[in-house]
Length: 149
Image (cartoon, rainbow, N blue to C red; front, top):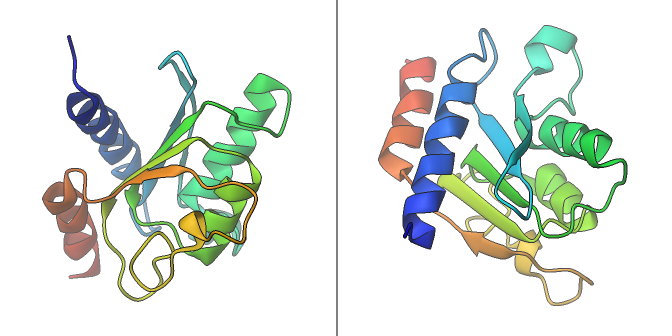
């Protein structure tokens, strides 16, 4: 039987594959899995592609998953993303009621899931997802390092 860690690593490998297709955008990939573990939607950064400052991988994946489910509440869903969510994305996933967040590389400059801020676990909010950070961190960080070199 697959452990939670093994499942998170398998899902993160999928997010890494998504991130690799980001073209001129920062290679961040996000995948949303339903309560049954089925892949619902994916997103990669599209800010350069679309000229939309909100076109982060997580936001696009959230929008697409909501469209698949036909509702904005993503109850029971897991968001897997290669980079720690920023404040915008952390706020969006909290508002979408995502149950679990799994991320790869930590982002000390803008991270809002434990690095700079901890929006996702703020006790003042009405929803706090489970958070697992640092999953395949080395691989996720390497993708970003290669991009910026």
